[in-house]
Amino acid sequence: MGMHNNYLKKTDTILIIGKSPPPIGGVTIHVSRLCQHLKRVGHGFKYYDLKNGATVKLAKLILMTNNAHLHSSNTILKLIFVIFCKIAQTKSIITLHADLNRFGSVKVAIEKVIIIIATVPLVLNHDTYIQASRLNKNAKMVTAFFPPLQVLALDSKIKVDLENILKQKKILCTNAFDVTFDNYGKEIYGLSELLIACEVQSEYVLVISDPSGNYQRFIRRKSPALLHNAYWISTPHSFYEVLKLSTAFVRNTTTDGDSLSVREALFLGKLTFATDVVCRPDGIVLYKSVKEIFQNKGIQPEQLPSYSLELVVDEYTKIYG
Image (cartoon, rainbow, N blue to C red; front, side, top):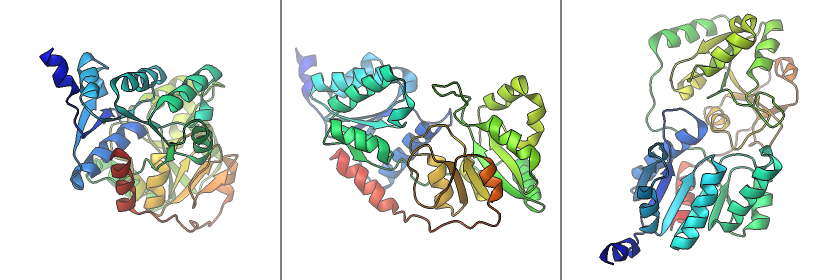
């Protein structure tokens, strides 16, 4: 009975549940930077790493807190989380890191149930917000972008290679944290398409950030002749540092959330190209076909959106209460 009473002594400290790098990915980087910035402003939090699994320990932590915030792409885990929080009388905050329209009909139905049950669903783009706000009046649209506080320097050879490329050509960089496919079997990050497009243009050198190495292996198996159409960085590294040395960034995705890389590129004032598959931030050159990227000769970045780090941090701390 005493143990049960201990569980009922809830703390107001926000419980953040997710994974931080490695592996490197949009969600893991967001979680890591969110925690860094909360620590910077002195906002107390407890962090549970999902690499340890969704265990009894996690259930106990949820029971003992008033606020829990989950970052996960696993639909079933999200559903269990919001239901368990409801039973535990814990405020459930959940970030939908993907566009709602990217899922098949069954997943969409479950994601909608998650939005309905969650105390505060957080979404990252306007299209998903319109749908989420109809299901839950507490839905909020936020940005997933926080500038890095700590940056891992690039390997010296890679840095020298990129600097040498820049002496002769422009660098068009892109990234893919893994090989993934959409509901139609297309590569979500569209690297094969970019590699083919780069065969017939000479203005840019395509630099591919492939920290897992999986994409290079995939291209080697599928279309080995395309490998030489890009400079590959297939070991763990800071993409932010690659962006700093690049002329432009391209996000050639078939679906998206609120891309961290897009936000980083805009933050650094880089010319940014992106597919028009979701609502994108201001300042991006939208396109339907990769050919359009190389037709934009001498284009300059548009008026970049204003960004206030303190307002973003403040928004999260208000959500946490």
